[in-house]
Amino acid sequence: MTEWTSEELTSIGNAEELDLASRRKDGTLRAPVTMWVVRHGDGLYVRSMHGRAGAWYRGTLTCGEGRITAGGVDKDVTFADAGRALDEEIDAAYRAKYRRYGANIVGGVVNPEARAATIRLVPAS
Image 1 (cartoon, helix red, strand yellow):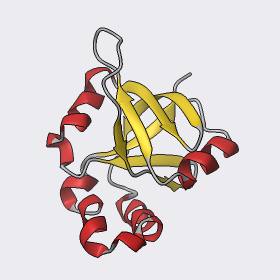
Image 2: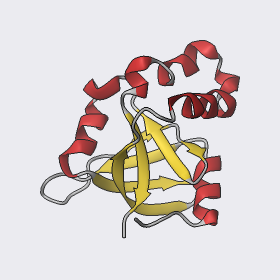
Image 3: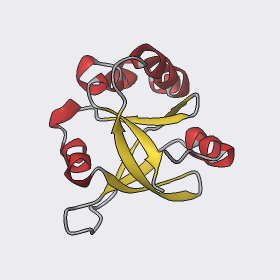
């Protein structure tokens, strides 16, 4: 598996938002969706506030790859299901990074539906 460089992790992890464009079956990219991104350890994570039923989340399942832009980094990525083992740590990362928005807003990305739609961004090789 390809890994992020420390510079990419820092730049993307510190970015306020990330633009994610998932790839269609024909290889073209969908229109980018702007979302919050958090770093935990050597991983970068995004969540769908609408859970697995969210349109952009379903789009990531089509080919499992796409392109992100954040913090001055443009990168092709694959989308990996983050599983549930890091739910609490990723919740804490969202709460810490976006606390200025208040619990009612941040609650949208730390609820059970969003947790179930956590994607780990993996640099494409």
